[in-house]
Image 1: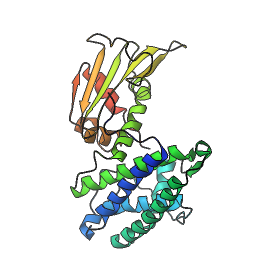
Image 2: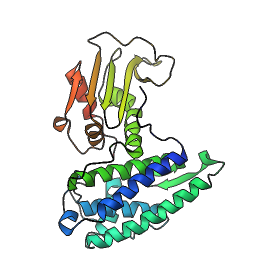
Image 3: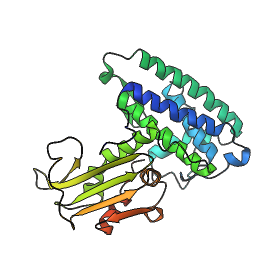
Image 4: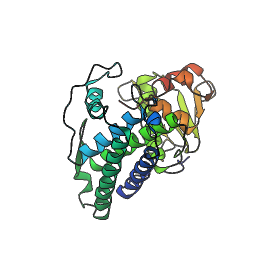
Length: 292
């Protein structure tokens, strides 16, 4: 079953996805009051203003304007070196008024949109060889842009949840995030959830992004379990799905799926339905997180 809307794969589509979610962030931030800026979000340790500060910092760095380094306290939510590095831009702006950070966001987003649209209009012939310096190291351009779309949309949803303004769950960026998680399902099912050979795990999103995928766990050449995505056009796509008792199907909304994949909600806090092994479903959802 194809995803609807489909996740963009080319430069033009990813620029469109970026544009939509970046503009949504500006639209959400602009009318915020001081109490709004101070509202906690589902991203541990961050307020609405902190979310905006992070986006400003990340996008400015990609334009070649990294923030100066400041001392970052040992906050409880800083569990990794990467998280501490990301916190620098947030800490730098903690004493700044929210309106000031929003103005910075508007400026940075406008420049980034101009940069990306120029890149789209003058797409390099050697696109596959173009790389972008990211916090986790150099990445091919399309992969880097996909990562930025995912990050922007994830934080857009953090802000929406905090402000009580749901939306954009059927956008190109939402589909990009969902596709990224589904592409990671073989690893999640086998490595994290430990689903044994001979089993199948199906995941169905009921909307607004609608999709269905599955992972068939087979024995690899080295004898260890190997996960294969189903419904991808591969030669095994029409192969039989194991009988009842060996298939676990998980149904959930786009919002529940993506909030769990972002690490914002615990499995116990999700609304989902299962046909099959409840314990397998729980282990898969426990391992679903793809964010650092």
